[in-house]
Structure formats: structure tokens, C-alpha cells
Amino acid sequence: MPNQSLPEDLRTWAEIDLGALRHNIDRIRSRLGPGVEILSVVKANAYGHGAMRVASELVAETGIFGVANLREASELGPSAQGRDLMLLSPCLPGERHDAVRRGHIVTVSSASEAEAYSVFGPVRVNFKIDTGMGRVGCSFANAEEEALRLKHVAGVGVHSISTHLPSADEDDGFTFAQLNQFSDLVKVLRGHFPGVKFHALNSAGLLTQGPCDLEIARPGLLLYGISPIEGVQSEFRAVMEWKARVGLVREMPAGASFSYGRTYVSQVPIRTAVISVGYADGFPRQASGNGASVLIRGIRCPLLGRVTMDQIIVDSTGVDGVKEGDVVTLFGRDGNASITVSELAEQSGTIAWDILTGIGRRVERFYKD
Ligand SMILES: *Cc1c(COP(=O)(O)O)cnc(C)c1O
Image 1 (cartoon, helix red, strand yellow):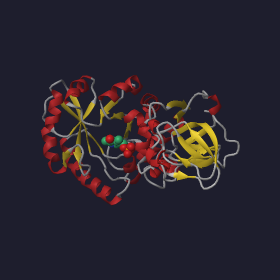
Image 2 (cartoon, rainbow, N blue to C red):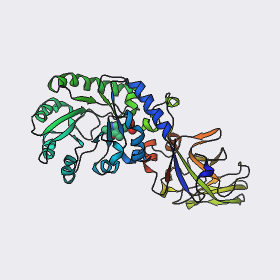
Image 3 (tube, rainbow, N blue to C red):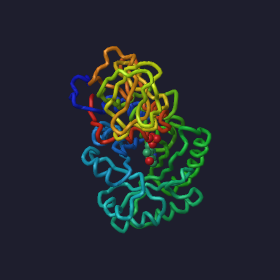
Image 4 (cartoon, rainbow, N blue to C red):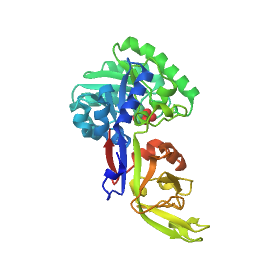
């Protein structure tokens, strides 16, 4: 989308490339092989990309959509085109009735949790086994016994049996051992649960451990074109670019101080640009003072001092002709320069998932194909 066609009163916005989304799911598909069903994770408004648009784009290659909770499932609405929706987090007791009524696949950690759903009607469940995440799931030691108990709960259909990888992007050794352990259990459970599907791989897992013999994979971040591990990023295309505009250009003398706490003082005269984005939009306040920069006219401009609620200040001395209204790239490409979400995340002491899902409501989303 040419920036000129965007309304000039836009202060900050995200450009979302639907072609990149399709490219990424095709790459995932080719890594997994045709037999594996893709559970496209579109929780948290599709990692900030807009769940409805994203789901519509991914539906052809998607067997199941994964959302965090009941409300997110409802918000997907017709965009899911009748695909199954899996609720990845446990429902609250007060949500169970609706989850059953709407026919979602719910994630349970025990037979008794499944029973609490089945009182409202027939329900399909994803039985989660904890192999090291320590969050939801049945303890590994009791998993076979619990699965057999689950099998006999009236009104409960076991759709799938799964686990989650806590360290697939940081610890190959642990993850390999974890998946081996899960695979051994899968062999046993297959005997008890003919036709039931098994799954474990998130984005990092499918990159480092795939392909494997599980029927479903659950990519999230990788759909959005960000690789959680190094070395394969070039295979994927970042789906989102985040932009803002220059609100004010100023000539500042040596010795001027900048932003709350006056943590930066200029050593020489500089030209600053004040940018119309702040932490209320989700620009990480923790990026302050850690070498973060933005792009203006293809030039990197370092952030000066602290991120404020609605504005940031950058050094735009190196940008020929910088002026108010100029488009600023917070992450994405501008000319020959680019900034990745992962780079901004690292400078902010956090992860790409956090940056993307933190992008706020003031940031309008635009779609291009
Ligand atoms: C969010 C989530 C995923 C996707 O994780 P990524 O690292 O973004 O690929 C997969 N499985 C479960 C259970 C999740 O909650």
C-alpha cells in the first residue's frame, strides 16, 4: 500500500500484508507435509493482526483455529467458515455452558474437568498433558490412567491429546527429550484412542523438531512471519509493519535534555523529530535508553530518552529534508533499511509475541494484498 494513499490524519497504524500470511502458511505446510492438520493460532486478535481478516486468509490451509477463550471464539464468527475452534486456555466455570452450546473443542486437564462440561451436553475435548510447561494439563505420571478415566465420561468425545513445549526456542535437548517422552505415551494411548489426533508443536517446535508423526501442528508466531529461532527467518515474510508520523521537527542545541527523567542530554546541536506514537499505543517503554531506533526516509534515527505515553523523540539529524507528517517506520522496511519486531523486542527486554499483542487500539490496521 503506497503510504500516500493513507489518510494524512493517521498518527500511527499497522500495515498487514495478506500475501505474506499466505506465503507463511504455505511454507509451514511444506515443512509439515500434507498429512498434518494445521491448527492456526489466532488468539489475542491474531497476535494483533486482526483475527477476522487473518482467519479468512488462512482458512484454506487451516483445519482448526486456536483461540484463547470463548470471547475470542465468538469474535471470529463467520470468518472461521465453519472450521472447528479450539479454546486453548481452560474455560472459567461460568463459561463452560456456552462453550458446550457453541460446539467448541475445549482443553481439559482431567476427567473431572471434562465432566463439568458434559453436564451441559455433548462436548469434544483436547486432553492436555503436562510434560514440563507446568501450566495446564494432567501430570505426565498420571496421564494414561486419567485418559482412560476420561474415555468413560458420558457425553465426552476426545478430539485430541496434546502437550505444550516450554523451551522449543531455547533448549533443543530438553525439547527433544520431552517429545520422545510424549511419543512413548502416544504409542500407548493410540491403542486406547483409535482415530484421536495428537499434537505438540508450536512454531519453534515445528522448526526444530518437525516433521514428526503427530497429526496436528499449532503454529502461531510463524504464521505472522516471525521466526522464533535463528537461521530460517529468510524463509518467512513479516506480515506486519508498524508506522507513525513525525509530529514536530525541532533544532536543539548542545546540552538540551530530553524526556522524563532527562536521561539523555545532547552533546552537539541536533535536529529532533517528535513521533506520534507512545507506550499507550504499545510502543514498549522499556525500549528507552537501549539503542532502539526508527526509520525516517530510510535512515535510522535513534530514540532519545524515555518513551512517553503518546510521543517519542528521535534524533533525525541525518535525515535530509525531514518534515512534519513524514512517515516513520517503527518496525518494517523503509528503502534499504529495516527493523524487525524481534530487534525491537530484544531492545525492550521482551519477546516478539509481547510487542505484537501489545499494539493498542489507537493503532489502525490496514490490509494490503
Ligand atoms: C499460543 C500457543 C501456540 C502458538 O505458539 P507460537 O510460539 O506462537 O507458535 C501453540 N500452542 C498453544 C497451546 C498455545 O497457547
